[in-house]
Image (cartoon, rainbow, N blue to C red; front, side):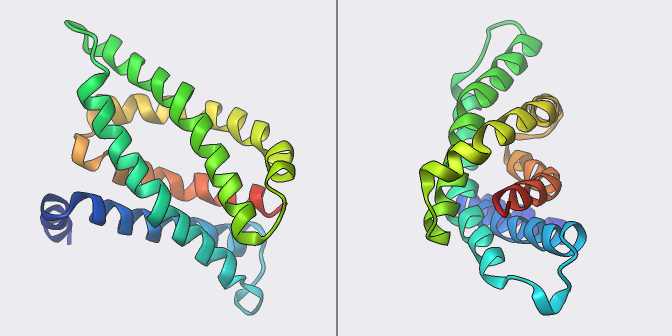
Length: 172
């Protein structure tokens, strides 16, 4: 399975990472509904899961893939691997995270037919501050030890729990 994934990643990196992200965003929502909300299968909101799958595959997967390539190529501190990692984490947490938390919440509001401004006012700061408690450390590991082609997958695996949280927060 891993060799098949690597072959797909080499042949179609953006598509492979978008599909992987889509699936794992769906898994995060299923976990939120079944393990956190304890809805049970008969009360599972498939539309909500569909929104997460759509966002993961159409928005986050391609954006994260492009972002990690950008960081790898453009955010480099000559002569210092550790400073480069810190600069990438700072860029990720100072630019990408605040932007994409807003895009996530706004996208969900649009797809739900609810008020974007209200959703952002209600949930943005909580999501961003929680993000800063988790993701800087994850990204330090990601940028230090994970090869570029596997960074989105690494983030996606960690994101199962994070997406469970975001899905729960979005549903509040």
